[in-house]
Length: 138
Image (cartoon, rainbow, N blue to C red; front, side, top):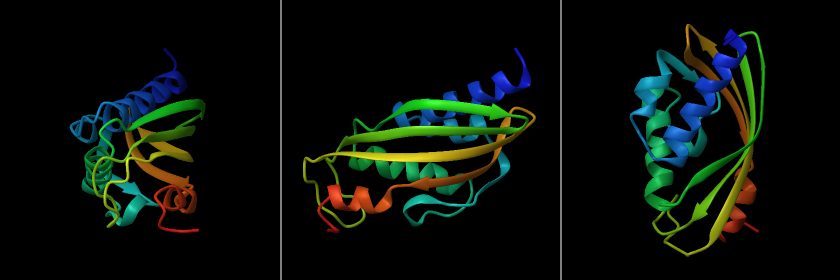
């Protein structure tokens, strides 16, 4: 398997593990110790623990949270991911009590890998659309 294909597999396995299966240990398996999240979601810290917190928060509020991968494009040490994540709100999230609403969160991430581990993330999520679906924004 080429490095490019291997990098794509790491990203896919990380996303599946943390966000679809709710395995918080995926952070330890796939993120380097010096991981930096340049665009941390939902106010979490820009490190491994922040990514673990984001996964935990989404799983607590949306027990069926999952990520649907639309595309993975890789070149060199970079992997671009286009996805839609979603689930049914069964717990509180960002101060919003459970609504039972099914929400979808489209986004794009760019991951940089080194020696088979993810070391950086840049991302763009539809935060406003997410808040609208929760009834917090109009």
